[in-house]
Image (cartoon, protein in one colour):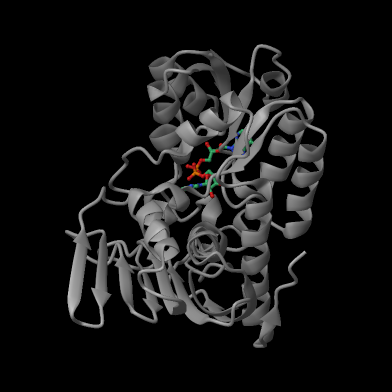
Length: 347
Ligand SMILES: NC(=O)c1ccc[n+]([C@@H]2O[C@H](COP(=O)([O-])OP(=O)(O)OC[C@H]3O[C@@H](n4cnc5c(N)ncnc54)[C@H](O)[C@@H]3O)[C@@H](O)[C@H]2O)c1
């Protein structure tokens, strides 16, 4: 079975992950690309073949296309993804699902009546260490989870995005809206929901623009650093740190502390998971390294999306997962702004 795919938004995530991973998948034919910046669409079409569309609606309305990747910037996800769903295309929408929970709900409304499936690009669920970590937690060998901490930090999106300058949309309040929280934080919030099999129901947070400056040399008006405290439905507490100013190694680690031992994920250069049982037994897992801005291996997200389409099943990250992760991030920003603990309503 061949799935014909179109890519909307031809910046870094399309160039480094979506286009090459579709190209590698034997069940995919790349139908074409659209970007406001035509040169970026042309550059990908030159490598991978397919048509360069002149408008996102032209691509979405192309009846020969089965599925699209929405790799546009955050503020247009609710427009592009819901239009594609309404045209009965399956959609892999990049994270965050939208810039507000309200806008995410527009997408979920469109999903209800669509013949296409919806998946959100929370690729952390698919790394080999995270899948293994979930299996270890589910096996019960570490006992119940008590507390956790997670971190995602790198040197900033101006080193990653297509526009490598201080004018990057990631620093623009109206386009990225939630800054590092919706760029890196949302990945870890989704990962926590996946690993802990629990819901975050209460948050406290601090979020600041500490370091990044725009082209006028003013501090940016979205947070570049954020620290959160989370309480879960099962009664556990933990912390999360998100940063765009780790000017050395990227930190993508998660630590889970359980009744019978600890689990360190992506906290060691050689071993992707280290289990320590009461200081007496140490089990080290050598798995694939996590993808980073400098290490672009396959994320598995495309294969999962295509397999879900072929088998007409729910993908591993649903639209509702995307909405819940955004809900927690919105609550965390509100907690930081009001300097109050905020409850996350689970509905
Ligand atoms: N899953 C991940 O790990 C991951 C990593 C990076 C970025 N992302 C997400 O991917 C999306 C794109 O990020 P990026 O890093 O590629 O940014 P980028 O700036 O490199 O590229 C974005 C591209 O989209 C184009 N664009 C914007 N709106 C458009 C629209 N409505 N129609 C057509 N083209 C449009 C821009 O012209 C630009 O070329 C963002 O939502 C981002 O959060 C996900």
